Image (cartoon, rainbow, N blue to C red; front, side):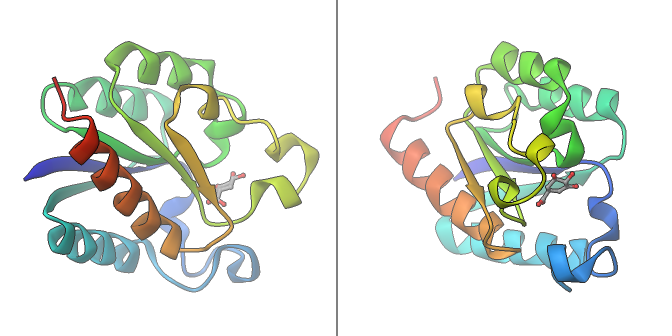
Length: 149
Ligand code: DHK
């Protein structure tokens, strides 16, 4: 069984009430429960974390090395700003799947740039909370094909 970290960044603790027309009405607790259940069905042991702080997200990525086989990451707005998060992902060399609830490419121009995408295995966006399950599916397939060292 592979261990996987589902990491959520700033403002995602407000899911459910935050601009539901953009991010949907599913709460973070519901997302995390769904990830645990879907992960278990795939044979993945899912740990969930959320922080509004860039440094805490970096610490979580560093701490994932040697503990988790991969990461599902919604870095929120840090996606579009954080070279530090990009460097952290490149440093730990873990497979990362980038998730966004909304289709960032159909929104404001500043959301079209992702500092996570160049160091991620792939990006899933625009499918709402379902995106996390899609990311777990993709991560499971990747880990089955390329087992962690
Ligand atoms: C979440 C955020 O908080 C935004 O800053 C991103 C992303 C999009 C999402 O769709 O999940 O631009």
